[in-house]
Image 1: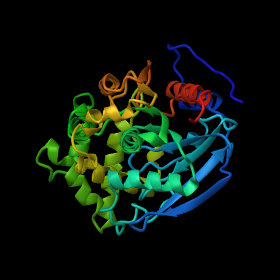
Image 2: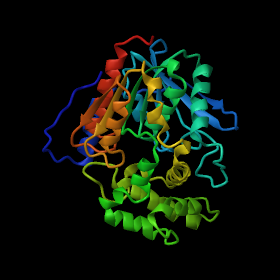
Image 3: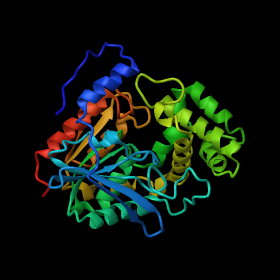
Image 4: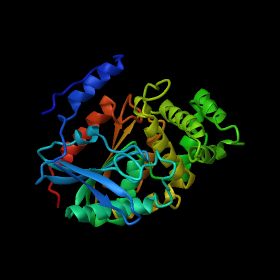
Length: 345
């Protein structure tokens, strides 16, 4: 089982020490007991895996990005004796194919409604009646879209780094809004696409470069984009490229998918997930947000809570958007432990 760990807020920890703290907060490493590939209607092959207790409470993990893919870290958020945990890589990323790192991979079918349909297809394929859903950042948007489409299939939700897919949210992160707090990094991003005449054109300018057939055009654009994403990821802020973006193929796929979704404002009618929150009336939720989350400011979480009475907010002080930080991770594990005490029905 897990060993508890804590430290004073005033401590200054190295990345190595933080990683060690997180290791002790999480459940032990675990391998899937079964895995497979699911064929989506448009031809995508979606990788999925299940770990934990085959007779445990079903839970689904929805990764962020879009384009981050699931990782072993997600498995360790759940008590393996209590949960049957399903993870899958959304279209174009992770171990699913075709992969967005290949510029020949078309993204036209990669849209929110199709991802929601993929989730439901996977549920039926695995023979699961209902499940708890955990999602972070983009995964929280997708979780809300799924739960509002299929509320009778969701027993509860844990959302972190909460977003609701509104135009104002995309503008904040990708069209200059948060640049007021990170002006140097925003200027570097703008400099990478001089053809963009204003902040509102930056996303589409990057999208064109990332879809260019010439790798010498794509690679620098992906690096610039992911360096910008790194700037506001953690608290305290980091300088340079976050470790998650070290792999060039990951950077290309991630940047292509993010710009694809952002340029289309998440393929959602603006504000629809807040207006349809009545569909969540019978679903309990836990909303976890860092006090200093610059990518998904905590005010967005409060707006969702106002229209979702059965949800509660857990504010994590001295934390940002990075879910793998010790403080966010601790709250996520507490939340899954709490839901484990309630029957799936």
